[in-house]
Length: 351
Image 1 (tube, rainbow, N blue to C red):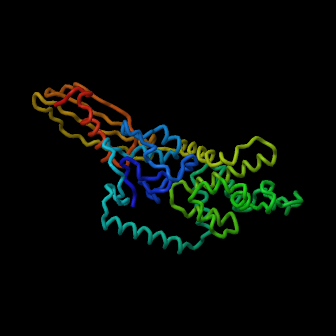
Image 2: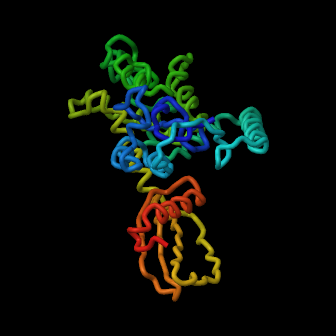
């Protein structure tokens, strides 16, 4: 089930399922400045019936910001309601439920019948949507190739294996990136890391594997970029270089992921085919309004166009405005129709 946004007063930004994505439909952006009980209504300009686009784009990862800004809002601001999340219109159907059960069953079979779990692990690691330097860091961490204090002592480079941050426990890879008490403030901020924190993990490989198996969009990428940021901060502290506070680790990692995603976005959509149709002018003294939308997937945006013509077919007014990409073409068409019907005077006709 997923919330359909009306006025946003009943839906919590971080805790509830309200995004129409294939994963668990909850936001995964590192929303460190948002309290757990903050509602979606804080993202809405109720006077204009629009999203606060500057706030949304600042707080959320690009793919989630695009989804949110594409959610249509009603001028009436009705109450939020719960809908079925597996159909376009939120109405339950046995067909969608069957597809969900088949999908769950198939995913379980693939995981259990894999002949080589290690091969699957490394394939998942190298397919992460992060910069190559972060993938290389993850590979080194999984092969125990980072110069942690434990490794330095084993190579007779250091006389102590204690972590220089907490000074209480040996610093292996898992401790340096996850278990150190100085990092508790970092990982505690992300509620979705709690299951891993409660598990008994003996290595960084086991920890990373927990997140590689998660199907939610960009959650595993956020995890590994945070770990990479933690390691860089650890090295900066060790060698006396300027570094960021612990409280800035998650925002920095989120910004790095946003920049990488924005640089990688390339549209692979096939060219659309335009179907011609015969247009007829209206009878005198009426006017005819035609409207349409254009979708630009590469920039996650769209445009709405309206033109009004008289009985001779002459254009008397037109409107073209940019808008955010919505969840479906049908929704975009409805928005175009709404824009036409809500401002006929502005367009130059009331007939």
